[in-house]
Length: 410
Image (cartoon, rainbow, N blue to C red; front, side, top):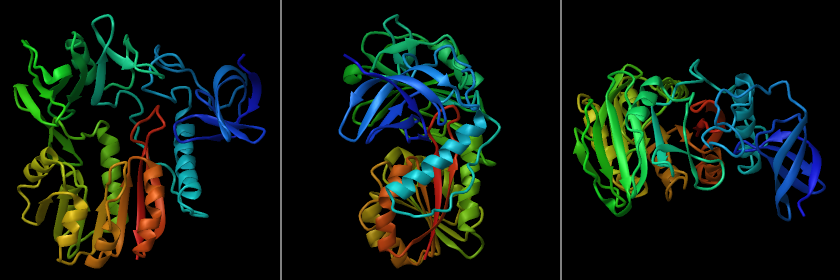
């Protein structure tokens, strides 16, 4: 028989759940807020923690608001976790989560955490989203738990151009695994990336301007209609963004983290900067506007092709394709500054030591997951990099997700 209890919630966890305590266990409760008294049903119990389903809010937080989406909720769409949270509270929670991760996982006692940085675009901001087939032969998003997909009546975080593209291609068929839709805010170009079982390319006819590709399981991209990329303007620079690569989905927030990196690095004339895990060159090109030399390192071939295209006009950019840890071992030219944007697995072998060997006195770490940054702190300390400060960038309003920009110095 399930256990029902009352809890006073005291904090917020990475993952978006509020937390309280039941004897010696931490209890995580989704769709609840710190400061609330709630009635919950335990759904998962372990030795040191438990998870519970929210049944009733007995004392609501002042930060609780009505959700804007008809699909928001515990048994509904899993795309947003915080539509019931006021915007200012969302920003505060993200700073709290960042602080907690650096203290609890990273061992920092009193990390300097700056106020979360955001942009006015809290709704209708997403220019890229992955959709999945539903049983009704339409596209939708997955429920909070499991892999069941629900069709969408409306999604208030989609950019109007992306919502229009979703309605234009809102059809699913047997064998379709997912559809990745992207639009350009600056050019209006549209990109549809299909993923199918068996990598089978469907027969397609379209009556509006759009590029369509098949993304194969081996990572190869097969163009079906048009070119496998689109152009986007970010922070005053023009970028080619290709299928098969990570593409920005909140352009103003992307511009925000680019400005933050430049500010923390204090890059200027005479500086040589290394951009490790450079991706499509978003930072590489931005850094090249200020530094004397920028060295970009990227392993993904499509991203490297984009970076080469995007940085082509610049004569102060050198690009190296290959696993960053392997590339850095071979480089000898001195640098002054560095930025790293590792995947969730974290920094590759001896990357901080090699950046220190090359002379980088200031290093900015960009993390898509604060736990990744926290786990990499010992590697940075071993290379004598000292944590200075960090800030969360609200890249995905209405969700718990954010990007961390952290500064280290030697």
